[in-house]
Length: 151
View 1 (cartoon, one colour):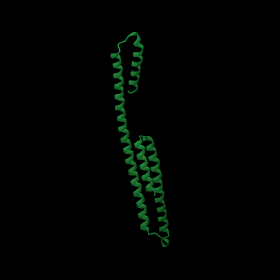
View 2: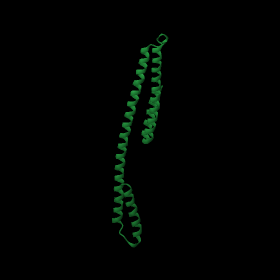
View 3: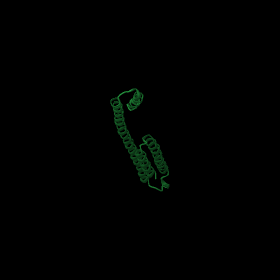
View 4: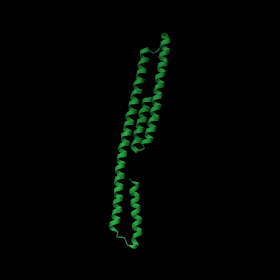
């Protein structure tokens, strides 16, 4: 059951990353992974407790000792697999964040270039006359401010 919860948590994490909400995805993944791992650890500890009780009361054992040991080993494997999935998801999230930052930097650069080009066009196309000077200066300043914002 806890394995299904873990798979569901990773599916929800994938949905968050598709929508672009990386921080929320990481917080959700961490909280769900912690819940699932703690549940599996509790199950594993219960098997260990039962194993120790069974060792103390060998004549009342209903399940063979090898079965308890096998169940504990299975739970340890599931925990290791979930930790590996979590590490892989964190690596994918970091890679996605780096790609997103690179794309944003390229977009900012192109927007800045366009703003500076518009300021130059305004400078060369509109010869300054008394009536157009105020209008041209206002728009020229706005394009330069936008260019500075995308620096």
